Image (tube, rainbow, N blue to C red; front, side):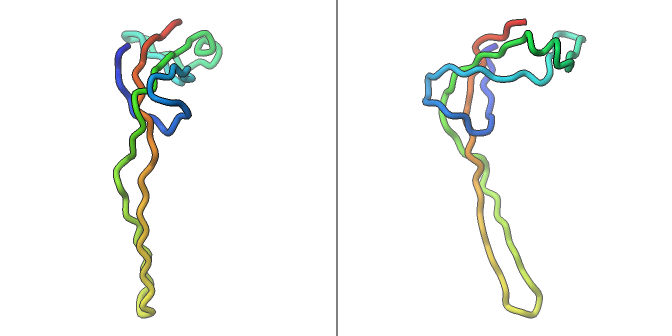
Length: 87
C-alpha cells in the first residue's frame, strides 16, 4: 500500500477514489492468478494526477517516390496511489 503507479487513462479528478480489478496476487512466495480467488480481492486507489507517456515518433517512408510522413503520439496516463488491498 502507498505505491504510486502509472496506469492507462482512468476517468476521475485528482483526489477521487477508484477501484481496480486485480489480475495477479503475490503474497510472499504465494502467487494467485485464479479468477475465483481474485474475485474476493479488492484494490482501492486514489487518483493523484493526469500524466502523459513518452513521445514516440512514427515515420513512414517509400523509396524513390518522395513520400515521407511523420507522426507523433503520447499515451494519456493517470498516476494513482494504492490506498487499500483487502483479501
